[in-house]
Amino acid sequence: MTDSSAGPARDCPGCGLVWPEPPVQLPDQAGASAGCWSLYTEMLGRSYNDPARHSLHQLLVDSYTAQHVDWSQPCRVQALSICLMTLCLFVEDGADPREGPQLHRRMVARPVFHPLDLDPALLHGRMTIADLAPADDAGEYETLLRAWAAQVWDAWAAHHTTIRDWIEKALP
Image 1: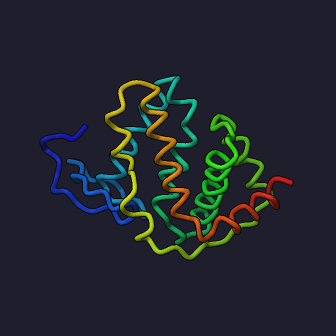
Image 2 (image 1 turned 60 degrees about the horizontal axis):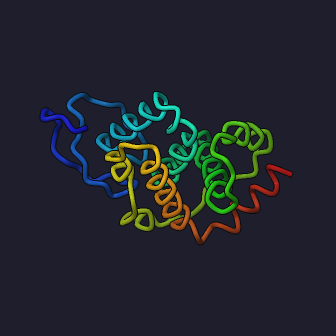
C-alpha cells in the first residue's frame, strides 16, 4: 500500500490519520491530506473491481466524505449533506448501500440542506480509511466498513435530528 518513495507522513485534517504523502503530487482535496486521499482512491479502486466490495461502495464513499468535512462551496455542501443523509439511512435504518445512487438522485431533486457546525476534532480518534486497507476477504471488509460508518455517523450526533429532518423533506 505505501511506497518506499512516499514522502513524509502528514496528519489528515479530516480524520487525523497520519499517513505518508504519495510520491506524486496530487491536487488538493479539501478536508483531506494527500496521503489519506491517495489511500481512499486505492480503496475506491478495490471497491470498483471486487463485486463483493462494490455492493458496499456507497457506504465507503459516504463514510469517507462525512469524515472529511468541507463546506467551502455549494457543490460540496450538497455532496456532504447527501452523504450524511444516506449514511444515516444505512447505519440507523439498515438501508442497502446499493440503493445509494437512487437515494442521492431523489435527495438532489429536493435540496433541503445547509452547512452544519461540527468541531473537526469530533471526527478524529475514530476509525479511518486505513483501518479498511488490510481487510483481505469480503466479510472482514464489510465488518470493518460498517464499524467505521457507525463511528463516523456517531461523530455527527449533535446534528442527527437536523439530518433526519432533511431526509423527511427530501424523501417524502
